[in-house]
Length: 452
Ligand code: NDP
Image 1 (cartoon, rainbow, N blue to C red):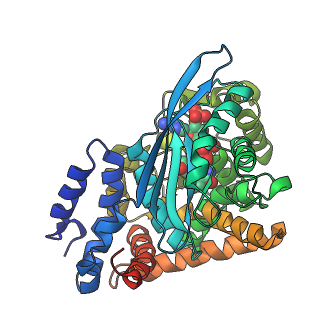
Image 2: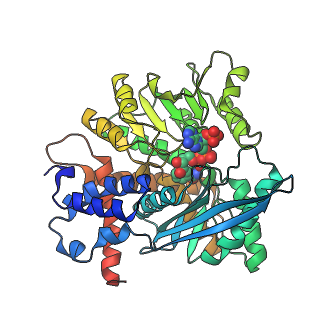
Image 3: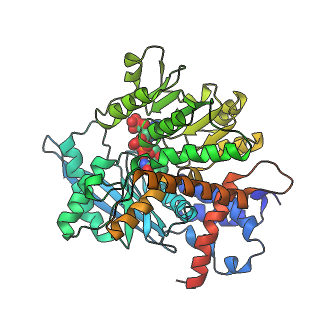
């Protein structure tokens, strides 16, 4: 039976839509998973009887709170903050914090749902959660960002803990914001514990955590290509975003002999046909992290590059694509354009950057397509290793951590192949493989607990 044609799935999705009005991203994320899980559990009655998928698609809790702060002109500003604790069946809730004006409860629910499967795929004991605020860090001064982070943590601290829920960074939240939030947590609770990951190295952070998501996405790409006897070496890659994930994806690509040619931000994208060298990538890291500038500035610095305002890079001919900015940035038409221009593999560094039409287009074309929950799991995997180091009061070396990350990405790839390869079909369905492998571990733990 075809994935979307299962008789119960429509009824299930109707229920999800009705219970979550105005939350299209959440419904989309559940639909993508349900399409693979329904056929998988067809002959497994205990998963039906215990309503496992229905329960995973209902967060354990959603905490919503007011965040007040004072701007540099002494105006009182009011933002909304959330923490979505989706599922802690296999470990404490774990997932990033996003500060961006597009953040809503529905967006965070989709991210926490996805995170549950992703964390399970890493093989580490972590449940799924996500949090954030509609606060826009763009254009804010250092002190405004600090005051906002402190106010955010003044409420969040009562919902998190090293054995309860361990947040990390995401869009708009990097080492600077994690530092301010950890400082406030420590001040309020008088406890120095591993309550956040992505911390500075001086106060409990882990080496290669910053690099891990982008590096992991390209390592996953390499695993997919090696599986068909190919490699990233010599291949041209379009990348979206210019933040943490995008710049480190580009760096790993260069290390493996590939050629990244684009970066983007919410205003447009740059194209550098000669390829983004490590020097150019470092310049972009400095632009975005320290100077908080716009990607358009790249063309003033590097001759031969061009900038297109208001566009995304999917029309640039390429062999590989790594969407590393945000959700739903590749639609059906974009996906068809990529395929038409010769793209043979896509690895999602961002969460759900390809919409359902885009995923269908990649599948129909039979190209290699790695969903974010598998491809970008390297970040949370190293966060899990940061938690282990914090508990043991130890720090592991860079080589050790790089090798652990490489091993984890390889194992995630193998799990996807185990559940995503169909007899008679040559291409591995990585979406199906990731969904089933991620689901099974959480589902079996939930069965063991009974109805709680
Ligand atoms: P950053 O804030 O470092 O960078 C985000 C980048 O995406 C920026 O270039 C930003 O542009 C761009 N962007 C954000 N929103 C939009 C939008 N609506 N339209 C176009 N461009 C946009 O975030 P990260 O690199 O950390 O995160 C990127 C993606 O990776 C997200 O989907 C995140 O959930 C996912 N991810 C991140 C992990 C991590 O470890 N950091 C782990 C796993 C997944 P601008 O500068 O204009 O805002």
